[in-house]
Figure 1 (cartoon, protein in one colour):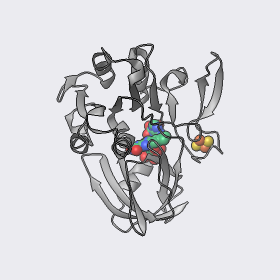
Figure 2: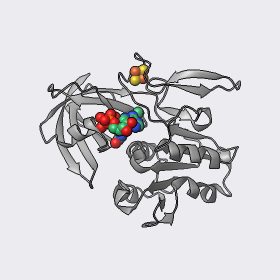
Figure 3: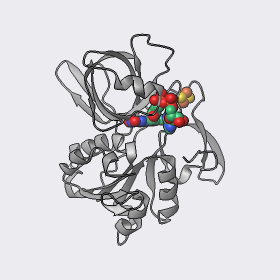
Length: 271
Ligand SMILES: Cc1cc2nc3c(=O)[nH]c(=O)nc-3n(C[C@H](O)[C@H](O)[C@H](O)COP(=O)(O)OP(=O)(O)OC[C@H]3O[C@@H](n4cnc5c(N)ncnc54)[C@H](O)[C@@H]3O)c2cc1C
Ligand code: FES
């Protein structure tokens, strides 16, 4: 756990924020798809840490800057939204397994629904850092409506091809981001592309059912988390094994990134 200070905490729309935290230089470089557990340093009430994905990361001479993108959904994130420059926080991380990058793949398809764009920003930075960016990246970004499409400006500057969908048709294709996929994958060889996805469970589930059988996809899963390190078993979920059996895995330590085909949907609440 290390101490951090808020550099800025900007409102992006009604309920989404972009926060930058200053952390000591000892904080390890995260892998894309990893997350941190964040909580206030001052005791403002009995608040457990909340998991947030690494959205940006910059290493400077004597400190590092961690960028987080978050949506206010409850008590913890509402508290984060009230923090201002200088507020002290506690950060545990980087945690979890993260996305695996295979440099031999010709194209990298990043699929994000809603706040799922948070880890995709950093994944795109890492792909660019390994010369796998530009036209080798394809972004599929979905949201309920235009006002909830966040991170768009940044993705537009990354040189990748961008496909947008909104549930209400206010921008891009009308429908879900999962519906974009068959059209994008048509004519592409499964071994030439890597797919990465993050978004609400309903989106990941429809992605799993619309993904052609020979394509695989690395999916970042959300779960309620208390410890973030595999100690409380609060985030355990049933996953399929290669041998068609099942096994319990913790989303925080064994994930949050899993092969989309591993996920058993029976016990996941789709909202
Ligand atoms: C690995 C990981 C990475 C995440 N990255 C981000 C991110 O980058 N940006 C972001 O905005 N959110 C992210 N989340 C979700 C975020 O952690 C929750 O929205 C947050 O913990 C809610 O806390 P709260 O106190 O505001 O809400 P609560 O008061 O605890 O809950 C409010 C509502 O949100 C639901 N909820 C709470 N926690 C979760 C959760 N973990 N997953 C799904 N629904 C939840 C509850 O069921 C309830 O309906 C991530 C979650 C995980 C597991
Ligand atoms: S949050 Fe405690 S085991 Fe995953």
